[in-house]
Length: 290
Ligand code: SF4
Image (cartoon, rainbow, N blue to C red; front, side):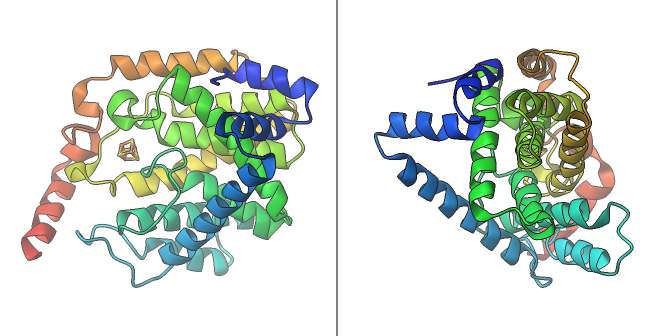
C-alpha cells in the first residue's frame, strides 16, 4: 500500500505513531508478524553500524583512489574538539561520510534510500544513539518513520538520480533523516512530515553530476552536507515552525523540478561537477595508474 505523507499522518492519529503504522502495514503486506518486521529492521540497523565501522578505516581507498580515508579525518577533527558543528551533528557527518565511503569502496551498506545517498540516515540515527542515548528500539522505530517518508517520496516522485537529480537521492535521504530525528526528539507525526518537507525544500534542484559516472565525487560529500540539512530541518519544526507548504506538494514540486532538469544533470556524468576540468584530469591520471 502506498501512502502520501498526509495519509501517514492521518493514520498515525488513530494509532500510536507513524512508526507503529509502518510496521503494521509492512507486516500485513509481507504476511509476517510485526515482530519479524522489526527484527528485519534491527538487522538493517546492525548493517548500518558495520558500514560506519568499515568506512572509518583510515587505510580505506576506492578503486580510483578518489575517495576513502576521509571519514577518519573528519572524526579525528571532531575528537580534537574544534568541530564547528558540535558533537552531535559532527558525528552524524563523520558517520555519513564513513558510510558513503564504504559504499564507494564496494563495501556493504543499506541503501537508504539509495546507495549514493546511503550515509545520511545512518549517520543521523547512530549519532543520536551515541550522543543522545537513543535505544536500539527507538532507533528501529525512527527507521520506520524514515521508511514511510521514503515510500511517499518514491511513489509520488522519484528516488533516482537518473530520473530526478540528486534532490531525489540526497534530498530524499535528508527528508527521511529529518523525519526520523524529529520523531526521536518527541515530534508529532505532522512535525515529522513538516521536517521531511523542509529538508527536501532546502535541497530542491540539486543536480546529479557524478564525476566519471562513479558514485564518489560529489556524492560522498553531499552525504555530509545533506546531514546538516536534515538536522536544521528537524530543529526548525521542533522549535514550533510549521512548514508553510503542504509536505506532499513539496514532493510533487521535486518531481516537477526533476522532470525539468536537462539530461546532462541527471547521472550522465556530463554536467555540473562531472564537467569540471580539474577533477576530470585527476580521475584520468589515477585511472592511468591502474
Ligand atoms: S550525485 Fe547522483 S549518483 Fe551521486 S549521490 Fe547524488 S544522485 Fe546519487
